[in-house]
Length: 125
Image (cartoon, rainbow, N blue to C red):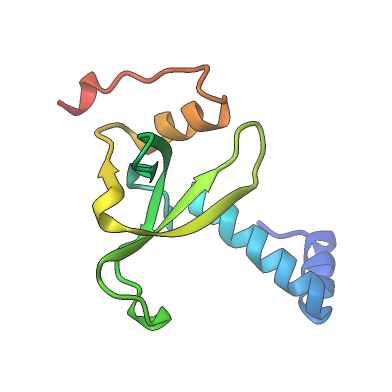
């Protein structure tokens, strides 16, 4: 349900090049978390440093990246930051990506809380 004020700001953002990029990026990010087009549905653990066995929790966003001229051996993984809405996108070798058998919302809560909250995956078994 749109309001005239919302429409005014939306049109202003769409007419200003830099604001349009920021607005559309934030809109896409929020739609990835909620709504019909959720994108963060595949939680994974990625081995960032195989020598020291350091891992990071994230979400695989795309498994096929040929349009970036990247081989099938890579996937894109989004790593949300703790206590914020920011994050980083890495293109990582698939051999370092391990799926997590847990609900995506629970994994996101775990990440955003800085690992303080935990999740129970017994409902998935």
